[in-house]
Length: 167
Image 1: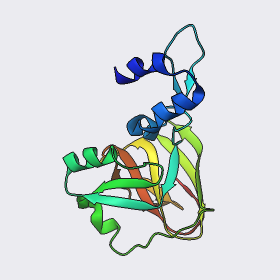
Image 2 (image 1 turned 60 degrees about the vertical axis):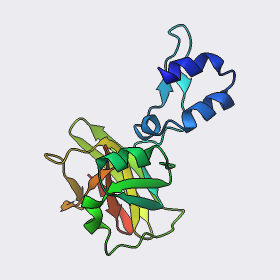
Image 3 (image 1 turned 90 degrees about the vertical axis):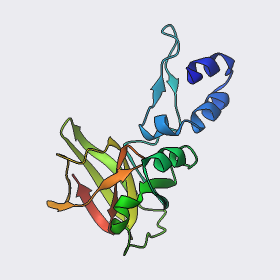
């Protein structure tokens, strides 16, 4: 709908970047390419956030409706929206401002993903993966760790300082 209506009006990559900048849901789901015309090359979305990324702040909301509404208003590359039902995971944690902290996907299969994290303090990671409360677990060093729902549909977790793999 809306995207298809806007494509014909865009005349440059800068214009395309402006279009994609406000498409938070697609960027969070790591939508890297759009095919608008089967006769042309795919259009590149430079705002796709990747398989996982670190954010510097979070916004707590009361319920799912507020969560959906708030996701439209944030910059998802810097902030995440979390339902208050997961608030206990944040109560004793202070996020660290570490511009050198990194997270990247290192292995992928339909039932297992592995990421490598390196950082000098507590960080908040968002994963471009749908949150399922049953059947999916997160592990650091073989030990199960908490993860939670964020931005209404995605997985997120707090990461302590160090260099390690997350499975």
